[in-house]
Image (cartoon, rainbow, N blue to C red):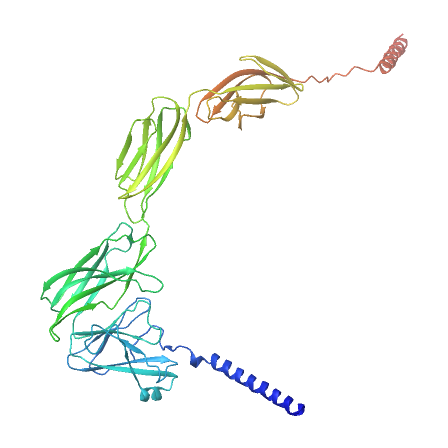
Length: 493
């Protein structure tokens, strides 16, 4: 083959390949090829029925409800579904109850594509329908399109009368509470009732556990309560549904009718909490401790206190807050343990304390003409000052273990100045000169004190107001006075 012939063929092949790629990508991006979705936001999932059924309530995603239809025996009931993007080659699958009415939870039935209604509506949706001939007391079912169905698979119900409704008794459930429900059962031939429950998982595929109670009752209406204990951990979501066992007098079968609703309960934490308030340091053997305990959604049933002095455990029943006093026999360090109980749950907290009765010591020094002088008790320290004030250096020490809290100096005129910690500088102001008593007090953190009293004598710095006349000026003045006296004497003569 010649080169002039090969090159055009290669170019033609490349163009054809690019065209195929473009077509393939276009088909992949076509939204019509995606999975159809229900044409409803709050799914009144049924688009209609014939005149033999009346809609009682619609399914809500938020409330996890199915729909209930009330109908009559030996009638045809037709339901319709609408899916955006649906077509006549991929009809939804209908699942049902225990086989009555050609339904089975294990084997699905393809619904009929409704050409006429799809063309009539012309809204881009495909319609499907299925007709039931009612020969039993109830039919329950769900509909699926591919992987679609609401996550809890709540069944929808067509019934001539039997149904069951349940309501939660408490608002919340904890790891200690039994899960309690009220069940309202309608109509007759009820041979038993119960609850189905399971842990909610992302796949919603865990097995249900059943709590069943036998019953022989011909009443047309019955309201009962039912509960079960559990071991679910805090934070677990639990799905719960009521059901009844009914002897269907139409089919002569014992059948299970599940509630068309899924309750979801979240297990909340009721572990108790406790807060302790008590001094870390004390000089009193009679120690006081305040506790405040609480248990969310429950009650505090018991408080136990171990005072760490071999006196045994002190128990306080059904009191969630109080101030407790305990008399120790000696000073020392103690680690108090307090435990609060809410039934079988508990929490423990601790307070470490030091009881000591050793007084601290302190030293005060007075600043006099640039030097620090340490007075003895009762000593009077004279100070010459330009203004009525004095400066002191204070320090303290504590051997009891709690540490120095603060040091204060107080004057007999009522002036009080304090520094925190074990040292500092204090300046005191006075109203008058003269002698003043000063009280030094050292406080440790346990409440022990050290006191020391001394005095200062404030004297003003001397300043001269009668300055002497300078010598030359004095002689001149004296000579002038003598001259004036002589002149005056001559004139008088």
